[in-house]
Image (cartoon, protein in one colour):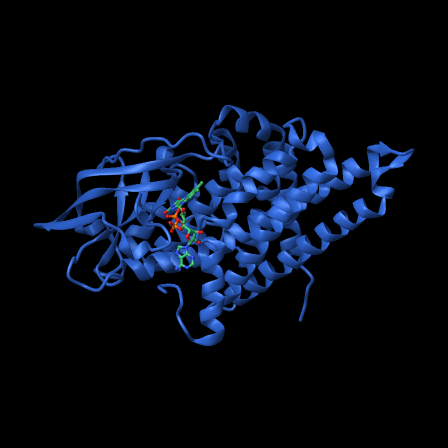
Length: 386
Ligand SMILES: Cc1cc2nc3c(=O)[nH]c(=O)nc-3n(C[C@H](O)[C@H](O)[C@H](O)COP(=O)(O)OP(=O)(O)OC[C@H]3O[C@@H](n4cnc5c(N)ncnc54)[C@H](O)[C@@H]3O)c2cc1C
């Protein structure tokens, strides 16, 4: 077992860290206040290859391994979870899913443009009446000659309003069992226009774009179908497996940001004539945060090592996602505690970390669902559907 990063991985980590410190972190508070999508940051990330991650170079990606992918995602997440969410959707839910299930023509048509940031992608699975129970989705695709006519509505879609490409899931067979009658489609906004009413008033991720997607008789040629007919649910689950890894790495970044901010504050803020870091109960929180952050990072790297071998990684990814998401929230809570009253204001970033960390426990499978996936892996009994 080797816990050392390779020289290439160290280099990528440094590149990502420098970029996050210089370009992402400084404007995070203003973007959060203004609820402004970080388009200018994506434009700067693209030339560095950060929007292509593990996508092979022949399709415009960096062709990096999964540990390197986690290192970039962690650094971006350390600076701003809203930017990290955009990145996770773009790479892990959209690009890697097209890479895995797309035809050569679909890969050539979309991957280079996604990797260059010319096209922003979104992933539409959740609907107003179905999130965890994704197979209950009600969006329909009805065959009409060589085309499909799509009707329905998606909810909580990251990047929805800024997307030019939507990977969506629709029911193509009402009579088939729930999970078997779903098919995935790619919608090019230019040719298959869809609506995207924005969702405002979010607790966190305020500069991430979140919208509904509305399909009213959207006509899609069969050539835009991703994967086989009825394979949609399996495609969605594979995509989430990949997305969860990215969320986990981003959550490690939040935990690290909380620790960094807390060490800095605790060594400067004085009470009773000494820095608060000199009080044992404050040091206890710093120690707990350190353990939580490092344990979460190692779980992410372990999942990455399994992915690098090309082996099934659902169990390891769910463990990493569950632990990192919960750890980030606990670290953010302790960070506010260490900052005292100042932690309750956006003068310091820790209140944003706390708000932004919350969603990691919800999206790409809630904490409860990660537990049921792990439970299924160790017992062989599927309790998800009750
Ligand atoms: C900011 C944000 C961005 C998002 N981005 C996207 C996106 O880009 N694309 C997309 O498709 N979706 C996205 N989502 C949706 C997200 O994935 C869902 O909110 C999530 O899957 C939970 O679904 P739900 O909200 O319908 O909750 P529900 O499924 O209604 O669950 C409610 C509660 O019941 C629990 N529960 C449900 N079923 C079970 C069970 N079998 N056993 C135990 N507990 C259970 C859940 O854990 C949860 O605590 C996003 C959500 C948010 C908030």
